[in-house]
Image 1 (cartoon, rainbow, N blue to C red):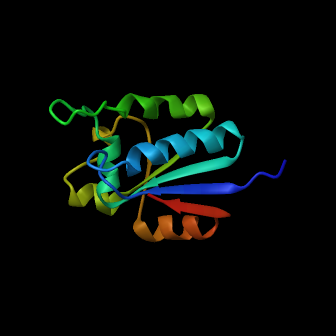
Image 2: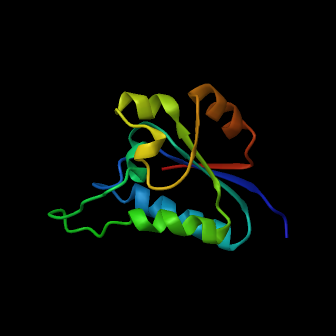
Length: 120
């Protein structure tokens, strides 16, 4: 089996659209097929990892805890754009799982090295 380097780029807030949840499901599928999976969180996508999601009142199940299962699928390459965090008043300590924070330029270089890039 040929292993491809997949980068999933998450730019949307966790709720209000299906993008964040769909991204997470596709990540788990790619990992189940033993591909080299990375995730990058930019712009409002950083809110997907913020601790303490409350979905009361929007009739949608919170999926924050699912990010904790990524390690079980050997998905450990998690990157967050430090400029996006700062612009939203967040730090890596505000996130629900350990991540590597990087500059947008460094993330851009990493994205260029991937075989497949999917943006949500």
